[in-house]
Image 1 (spheres, rainbow, N blue to C red):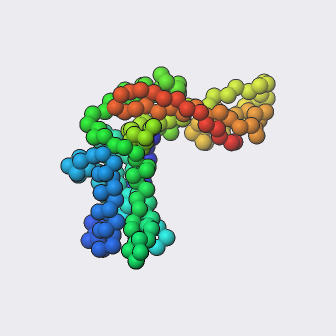
Image 2 (tube, rainbow, N blue to C red):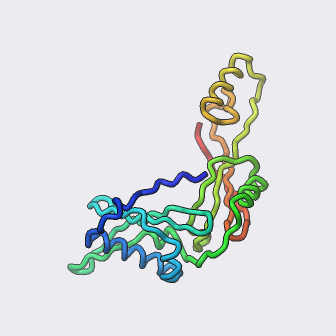
Image 3 (cartoon, rainbow, N blue to C red):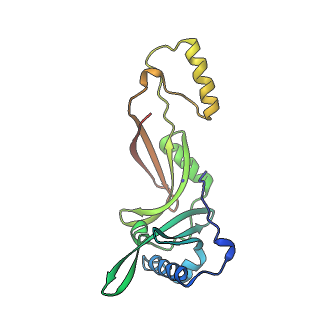
Length: 206
């Protein structure tokens, strides 16, 4: 979901070109049309960057509410209507229907709820996106995968694995007997408005 945000400076507050301003204005309008007011947008959305290249047209926003921030990318395409080119904005689909989030649970409580939901976890980050078509602010994380060896480990292998774990900053290294298997991955998502936890499953290859 702590979340490492890639923050793009808006070119040292430089003046946007007319083309860039068009992209920003269109992106802003696309976000507002998902369900929020212009005043809410002004308070909670910050322009981070606008990219206007033939192969990459994109507006990057930061959404903030209380102590949480999430980065949103609006990839911009287009279609032609006669001689006119009409921009399309991916942000409408990547957000879904929005509501004006005003209050959230504390980060400390969210972390406690995550632990009670999926146990020890790692890689927590904040995401803002659709759940069943409605935009929700979520803390998401992966459960730590603690898989015990199927057989006793030789002392040399155990020592080697300990050194490897310390270097990688992890708790447990999978046993060599388990290498090559597809390991289950438990995912957790805490709704930062209600505190509700949702679990999901994924897979990771070694």
